[in-house]
Image (cartoon, rainbow, N blue to C red; front, side):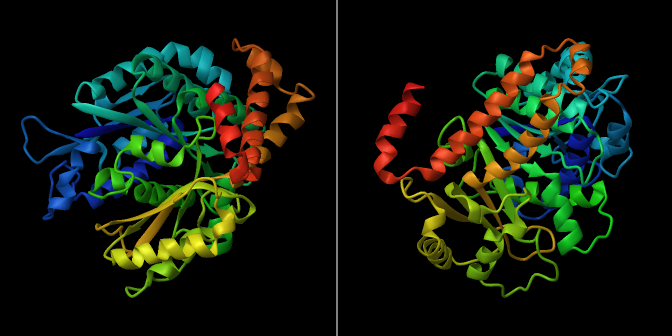
Length: 444
């Protein structure tokens, strides 16, 4: 079995994963005691990917999860929740002081103090795996623990398990949700390190989540609970091919192979058909209509319009019953009608598949995981805020007090600029330039 260990870092990472695990428990029919209560082979066939079975209690399953934070509040709330008994002391490590919304505290001072405790918890989970395929990390880029300690953990994992993949689900900050002024610093500094260690970066943008709640769901004052709900539902859809039988992206390595054509562009945009729309999901919903909803800009959980870029690669997964013939026709139709939105030098760069197990209340829904040059908008937005403050060296002294060198700011800004430039180059590339570009990438 190919196991995945979830690493939840910081308050945001633990909150998101808590909602994600609630969905996973329900889909695999695992109750609050860990007992399997389902009646379908599909629920058990790949359950060991995210769960390990209790040695003394057959058909009792516990999550492969590590809960890490520098303050106890978020983890205490998880333990007090309905599935809290499944997250024991061996699953978590808690510090005594907050990272104070500073990447430097999370990565250097506070993070260095607690990193060995965090790695011990991760090692405990690794020892229970037969064939570990990767780590799934949820964390915020705006806070100190999620950005700083999250990146520190990623770097240590790559040192200790060099052949294992890391799929990161980072939450990009937005002033609509938080009023912490140094969030752009934390985000860009974190991305500088995350680029070195994470194989897949699934972009989650608070800006887009807030707009979905406010404009589509008519929530006047969206709370973190509202935002986390959208993230958890989308994560549940993205990971369905890991957890249930299917022919597309059924391992983390296959996803990385299919969706990340070059190591310098690991950022993925994700949309879920039910995120940007309200109302009931009709049982007779056609695949073409569902595909149209999935490709709609309102369904993406990052504030980038895919129509303003070009898809390098994409995978579309339908959850529920459907016709493979209709699926193939729908995929071919979108490739033909939307050919200008797909780069022509990567053939067959949209794949479609079914996961027979429906998600929650929806009899049929779909998720799109894509590598699109439109992601530049999200990266540019955060970089502009970073540069506006850094030009005047605002708040830089505070990071220096925690052992950070000013040159790391310069390096982080330069690297993100390079990523944006590479996406733009890929967007402008033509089929005639393909051979020359590949040769340059190979030499680099």
